[in-house]
Length: 270
Image (cartoon, rainbow, N blue to C red):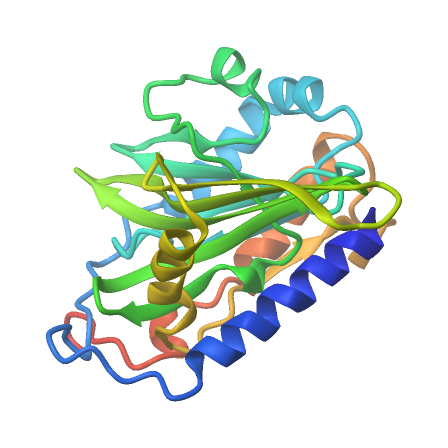
């Protein structure tokens, strides 16, 4: 499974490089983005959530969470928390939490049961599968600045990938499906025997899918690389249980890289 994931990732990177070569800057999108100041005490809010809701987290992911990191996905100045599960599939599931009016909400999860375990007020129907924090790319597309990710997974007989854009909707991180592709293979020959596509949630064909994907594959990448920590970075330090998870969260907060430290984005007072 992991080998398939590596192959899918390599293919995605290759397609992205081919599309990006020769990409031109969108003339109607500003070169800078003004980022608000982060919410006061956002670090303590995430820490308190992980501690107070540990029993829920442990029930949903009995094998523990594989990684934790912080990324300002909706460019509102306050980062979201991304927690990877330890699924055995080709790509890890990314659970995304947002701080909204002082309370932490799960806004995206690969588990259907998350909607019943957490307050589902802002839980979107779009989930993300990827194995790296760096997969979340900050780009200046012709439709504006945004974070996006090529979410993908598969088995020996199927593969799918979905371009997901992260929007801010009334102060809430809202992942949106840009385009989706699902392929089925003959288990003996590896030949594609079935394929289906959607663009913005509606049925589409291959060329329409690729045209939608090109907006992101051909965008001007800001060069920002999100950082976090993984369980296997230090099994002794991130021992099983509440204390190990909270230590991982604290280390992820230390590893957090504000966007203004990496790319040329304007911020108040800068």
